[in-house]
Length: 165
Image (cartoon, rainbow, N blue to C red):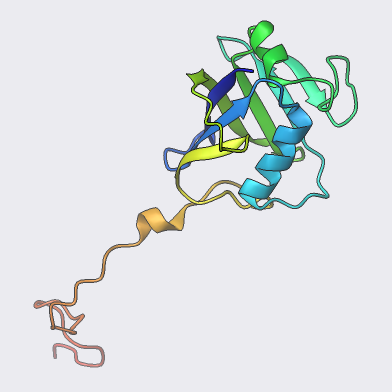
């Protein structure tokens, strides 16, 4: 069975990135379970996959229940490849329409000792499932310079309480 590589991103974020390898026979439900654990999301929320064509247009929707295109447990990755759905939106917050975009990135060589799906690369922190948007505060933290001078007062600035008269 073929193994496929998908790159995950959050629309509007340049910080978050994941790469996954997924066997072709993996159902969307099994992928959902994997993503839940990998992202640390609460399992009691409704989720949805949206199948995307090459121009990022939504072609189908796969829910926990069949919404006309099949349910998550009936559709596998190979079905998506056969339908030329080269991407998925994993909608983890239906109320705010927040999602993770998974784009097909080619086939991968199967490792006989690996279990699939599997994470092969990552950048950025996991999104907070219940936040308004994606924030990765690590990108804003400046390195601390321990040059020995603990003075935080600029040369042309007076310490607090001292004013020009």
